[in-house]
Length: 584
Image (cartoon, rainbow, N blue to C red; front, side):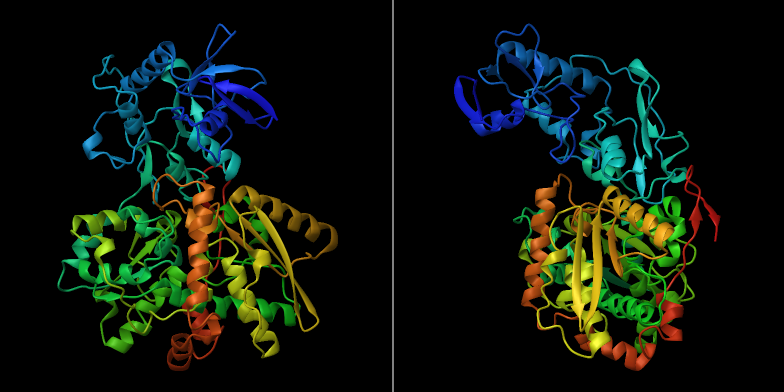
């Protein structure tokens, strides 16, 4: 422990604590812009400068460790002047159309300008306007908003290990662009959207389908159905000033009805269906000496990452589609038949925590219904904007159930939204599929939590089922490299099944979730899903009565020929330079 003073207040902290962290403990908030608690501090912006007695120059609080005996001052006239000067220079190179910016009232630069009392622009704006990058199916990049904080580069390189973004040019001409300046849609970008979550301004955001969805809702010839992913119910409330982690499943269903959707379903239904298809696949491979491990296929960011960097493992990835795509296929087949609605009149909309779902819905193979299975994908942020536009406040909504026949779900489906949830749900049903008996304790805590890589071993009547879970693509690399080495050296892996989620924290940390999250908040959101799991009458996917019905009336059985046609898929090999398909 060391002792120092912050603005003449003595503070005692562990050696290695930064000035920024120490000041917080002393009760002082030092303004920051490039800093994010989940990234290594780089000090790119300099806004966090402070004075330390005995030193001629100021120090950047985010990356300077406090030293025993230091006297630090965070709010002197000189410090305030430097911060304002730095921020005014940033504003001179930033497009100032705040009222129409997607980050209006959610922008860290805007908030900081207010905090530092900047009411006029000191410097004339002199930047050359650049074109938007609209090449991606999921993400828009607006270089005119970029403040060169480098957060997007850091998360893409250090956490996701995709390296789709980079600094280009030098000096005052420096820009952040994709690695070869060909557009994000022509790069190795996996569409995970973590760059949009970490960006403090409106330089990176989701490509919106809002206008197209409103058009469909207002078209009397169209029958518009909607599904909402498991994670949405733990996040949507944040957009309406509800307590972070509030469970809003019932309010969400009610709000969507009032928006004008013709049928409000729940992706949790097809999450349960995914477990039956994927679980049957895992058990079949184990019993028939098939290729192991089986790796989950729910996360489209992970799938494109695999196709680009680990295509040699594609035959180990489950062929089961994601819950989103299973729902889309059934909405235009099973549901269309039940209701007697021509499938060409059905518009299938999904609300997802994930920008990569936009890319997934447009994959050319996702048309097994005979049509595009999912027509439009909205992020959590988009549906919040639509609800507000419609004058609907989520807080005021009653709790209502989703519609039949694709609205009933189990606790196993709900926990899909948290890292480890898919694996836990799969194990709950895999035990039954192997033994014919129910797993007594369905809380498999070994696969829960925010550790980057988790392992567990489940005894299934003598079979030691070894599983692993990874979230965030950097952590996925660790487990995939290990599996690759084992396969090359021994011809087999120690694991039977692996869950991979592209986003840190799983879907609760998806690229389409509310702005401003960190890992602590993502963990809190995950806890909400586990609480709902415990509260539901059914906690195993194979117990869902609506799932039993869809097999009985339409799909016959898990992994049947019909189920394979509608609910399973295949993968590609992609180029490591531009992400384009090079081999089917």
